[in-house]
Length: 151
Image 1 (tube, rainbow, N blue to C red):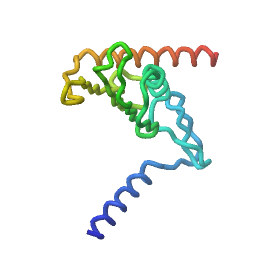
Image 2 (cartoon, rainbow, N blue to C red):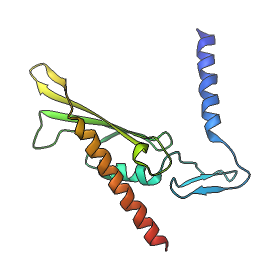
Image 3 (cartoon, one colour):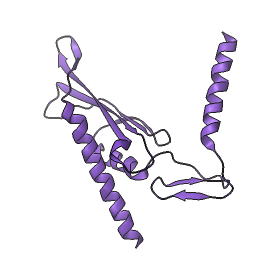
């Protein structure tokens, strides 16, 4: 058992270190805000416009977890004030460092309160698509605003 845990620890450490990378000079990626190099600056792993657009779009929901390096945002359960017997939870994956439609995936979970407590319920397939569209629209707005401010 100890050897198994040791192998897992070594594997995780190797995985984390391989993600660090190094460069002989500092390179800045404008879309990710990533700065990689020997200067000791932080390297971000996701597109900054998608990241900020996701946080903006979901600002009404409480966050359970947000990982800007792995590109995962998980909300806590949220019930709209006008419908307290229904709640939603989201997991958003930012899959690319570029601002692309296929660089974003939203997973929606829905529950309804019944006599047995909270029970999983079907989610309208359009819900995730509409959220992805809203995030992508906001990301494009942020990018255009940044480009306009830079000129």
